[in-house]
Length: 117
Image 1 (cartoon, rainbow, N blue to C red):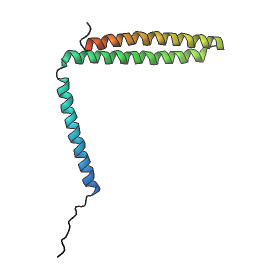
Image 2: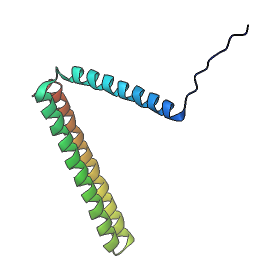
Image 3: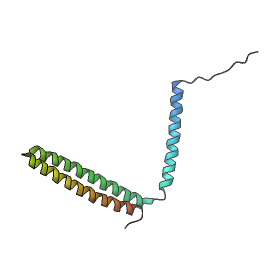
Image 4: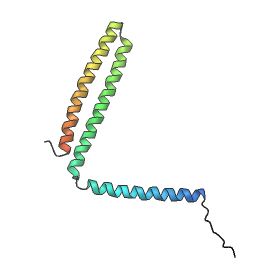
């Protein structure tokens, strides 16, 4: 007597539901891990990280404004020499600002990690 094999067929909907459940389980696990890892950091750390993010966004805003100003000046320059001067000044200011901002972010990072004042 032959034995009958039963095979379960899956539909695309079953696969989607299974994948969605797996993603939901992973998300829940990551959230739990993240919340437990951050619990010891406290409100002070969160505030310092927020300050650092705000500082970086302000810097980005200033850099975009400097780019807009550069293009405005370039559109109105009269000759090649003036264009070179405008570009040179822009690059020097950008180097100076990036250097200053790097120092600020380093100090803020030290403070956030408990190594600074």
